[in-house]
Length: 493
Ligand code: ADP
Image 1 (tube, rainbow, N blue to C red):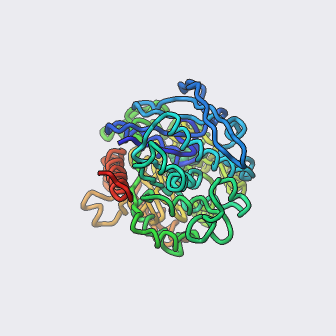
Image 2: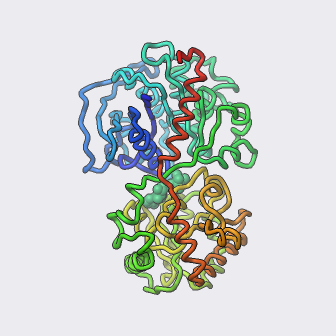
Image 3: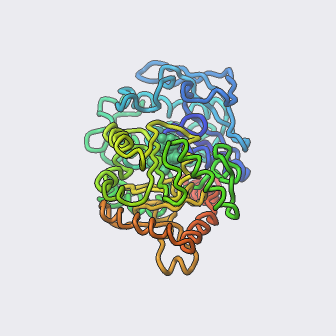
């Protein structure tokens, strides 16, 4: 298949969260399975590491925006470890900024314009490079306009007739909702501004647009696919998703095992495998404690957390139970950035309890790997979690996750019970009520299990035995693409 993926971030070009890992992981997996894959991204000069190979194509593309022609260059790169091509849309005014979407906690005021333009550049890049895709796969609200452009403007054009439009929802909480006056930025007729298509409660909603106009919609875990059709998790789009449920599939994300593998990870002080995990993790833990100036206590369970500091990730639960938690023999390490109230909370904590709590407020890819390797327990008390990646990275690194039983956390962590332990399938601890008492109780179960070698070693081994590679998920994406192509109105096959 010829597959065109469009995303607003991808590792290692630019990253704010899981979307970046998934965009490059899926691109690479599909390419390795023999498909012809092109990933189109904005060219964020400031975010992109110097070391990444890139080369101007010498080609320029133009789109019409507000009745004016807007021009961008196209820079070419590759996804390492595959022959997947990356096209970077070079429009410095839109994309050469210090943040991707946000600066100092505020969204860029022209985000609607930036990503409507990007969506149009994606389609024009496909035309200019004669990609003739079988599938155009958009991701999240930033490329939500892409499926609409395919259905409304491009499907009639040569090279696009047989392309299915697919959208993946990575997080329904971010919808790209903008005021009605921005409708002209989409370049589509005002007739589409109605509650069945692009309008949602008086605003233009780019994620809804993507859902409505796609031939297939996926989200990043089977449980989240069910949850988002309910009032509790639908973020106001539950009705739209119920209406379009026949084209909705949940596909659990994979892990790029070239990047997240304790046996080969260049960022960690001592690589280790399932066979050498005891020794390897002890060395990584010691180095992590040294890095953070925590007492080098070999037998004190060290809990790690790497996360955007937002409402979603459960910092309110940690805040509520922190005093009780710190009465236990435990160390906590945080890496994250986001809402100032949570950054301040964590910073304060490190000052009050430097003997037990340490943190880096910021974004640090290498440190994220070191925390995964050096922690014993990983905390993921998310209020909701479409898929979540760190609970999978944790298991691969022999770090036992404690998670709220929602979304992808349900699908990727097997709760520790006497039965699952006996069956040797338990990999972590789930709690079922979004309350600090339920979280603390389950975390205390994990701390108790840590003291029982025969239980803990089984949990570690089970987690490290799981196969999180992208291959399994990439195959389900292929089937979804094939179904979407078969269902096209003028399907030639
Ligand atoms: P989300 O996409 O909701 O932020 P995910 O669990 O799906 O959450 O993915 C988050 C990704 O971002 C993981 O790869 C995680 O390690 C990484 N990450 C989050 N915050 C940081 C940070 N401060 N420094 C380094 N990596 C981070």
